Image (cartoon, rainbow, N blue to C red; front, side, top):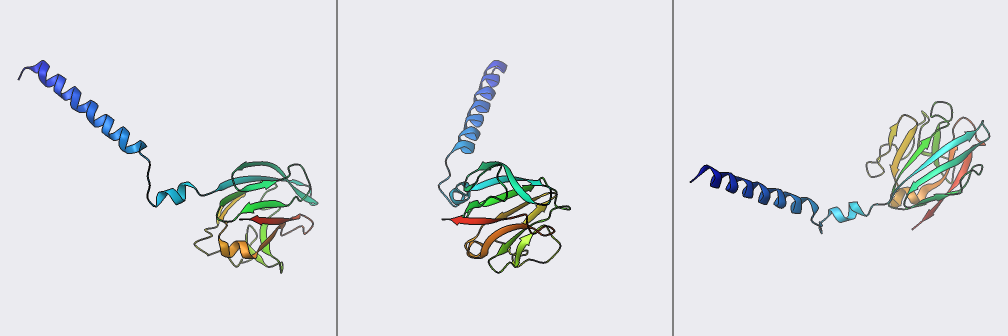
Length: 162
């Protein structure tokens, strides 16, 4: 074979492999990953008004809603979603906790132990002033409000939707 024929063949093979890789990476997966792709996720950013209240300054994503700029607003979450609360008030100054209807800590940023701290399905992850969790059915059945563990006036209801 001539050198130019080998170069053309090599180029053709490279194009075919590139197309194959592109098609493989962009094909629609109809397997188990679809459930993960459909997982709701959202972020709420909380500010503070001194030690009197939290306010929601921003919400991004799906399955989460609240009125912004209002003191201690109700925050609506959809069961099955994974949510991040960014505590701009500071986890060390205004630790954000999540409680049940009996005012018992389920999980949060304070040092006290919570009932869902080590639940692998809820998968609570604290990262600086942020806290992320998955709202499982069992957590949704218990979750009632959010609160600053230092300042009890900084609290609001959590409303759950299906």
